[in-house]
Structure formats: structure tokens, C-alpha cells
Image (cartoon, rainbow, N blue to C red; front, side, top):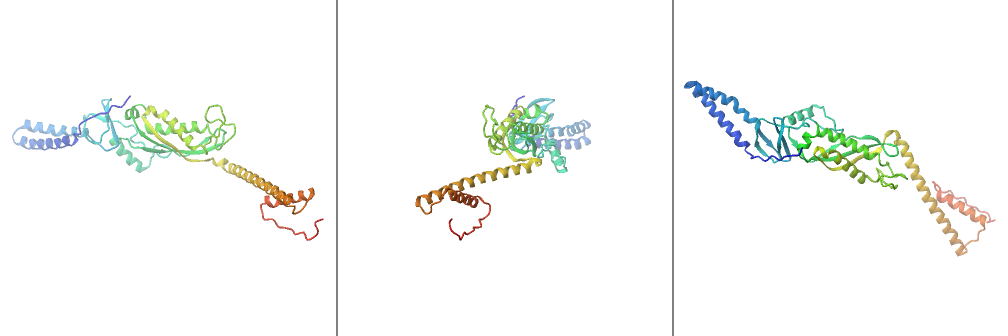
Length: 327
């Protein structure tokens, strides 16, 4: 099923004015027929009864709106250009998602306000061609290491082919929401939350440093492509997909935080020790070069120990002054 662009003259206003003229003439005919001719009166009453049939054929389209028209079950075309049209009064507009209001989870919203909007949408059956955003709720998914993470995405999309959107799937809004959930799970299972050794995220057989946290742009691009492949048949174009929230699941968040803190402490301690050793070596070299003081190996070991304690300690050192002799 491919979209057929229906090009009609924008003569809706002329038909509307014509119907008013016919009604005025028919009313005048009823009045005159009651006085002079029963036949004229009967014809005028018949015209009054059938002229309203012109009104269902009047269609108003605003910019970025479309109307998919069928005639006795057959697809005849789509109106895309804004204007006031008159179409076959027996044509019916089709939009199976007219009453569907997407929440963040993509379900139908049952609130009273949404029902009121849905009633209006159901009456018009117009399809929006505007760029829209689907913001799915957070999902709990296991990454490639089995760690549960919570992740949410925002998908920017629009209708590209109205015929495919209406006739190829039952409800294109719910279809899009479900495909977003499926694509998100497929991609997240490939990546670890953070950089992990011996993990291949590209499928080339070589371990890399891809991760959900560090490669968010690449992950989002793969999610967008995955969704696009799934919704192509529904005539939907995925413009962009972005990760809106990413975190460990609550049941392991505290443990993972302790792990990150421990890793940060180890890295900091390593840096402190490397710097302290360099400073001790520099101090000993300066003492030897300047011959300021000559120390034996035992005194050098004691000096190195004291300096390392001072430089690597968490608190300020409390010096002890030795007032005795050197030996």
C-alpha cells in the first residue's frame, strides 16, 4: 500500500454557499407551493431533506495535516494541502489512532481531558504530519554483563506515508511505542553499563571500550536505526532518538556506588604513592649531590619511611623533634 496524493480544487466554500442558496430557494418553494402547487411543495421539501448531504463532504485541512479518504472501503487518496475542500459526501476519513493518546509509556490515556481530546480527534479523523516526540518511561533491562539498569529514551518521529500508517498496521502510535521498547532492549543487551574488559559491542570479534555511559551517542544512533527498520512498514520516519535517563537499578545501585568509590580511592592512592616515591627520590638525590648530610643505609631507610608516612597520610603530620644527637 502506497500513498496516493489526492489533488482537488479548494471549492468547499463555494459548495457551502451553494447549499445555503438551495435551502433558501427550497424554503421559498415550500411557502409558494403551499399556496399554489402541491407538487412544488413536495419537491421543495425533498430538496430540504437531501441538501444537508452536501455538508459531510466539506473538509477543512490546516497546515501539517492530512486526511486519508476511502469510498465504500476502497482507498482513493490522501489530502495533504491545507484548504477548504468538497469531496464525495460518501467518502469516509480513516485514522485508527485518532482516539489514542500516548503517555510516556505509550499506553492509552484514560483521563477525562484526554478523552475529550480523543472525541474531537475521532470526529475529524485527521492525521498529524508534524514532528512528534514519544518519551517512553524508564525500563529495567539487563546489560551484557547481567547488571540491571534503568534506561529511558525520547524518540522524535513523524508520519511519512499516511497510507502505510493507516492500512499496514492496526494502530501506528501503539505500534511505534512497542517497537521502541523492543529496539531499546535489543541494543542495551549488547553494551555494558560502564567500560568492561573483554567485551565486544560492535560484533567484529574484537574487544572494545563501548558502554552505555561512555558511548551514549553511538548507542542512541543504533537505537534509532533499529527502530527505523522496525517501523518502516508503518510509514513512520524516525528523526532522532536520545537517551534521557540512565542509571543502575535500585537493587544494585548502592553496591555499584561503593564499587565506583573504591575504584576512585584506589586510583587516587596510586597517584599519591607515585608522587610520594618521586619526591623521596628527589630528596635523596639532592642530599647526595649537595653533600648536605651523609646517611647510612639504615638512616636512609628511616628517612624514606618517615617521608612516605607524611606524604601518603590522610591527616597532617605531627612532627616529633629529636633534641638528642644524631647517633
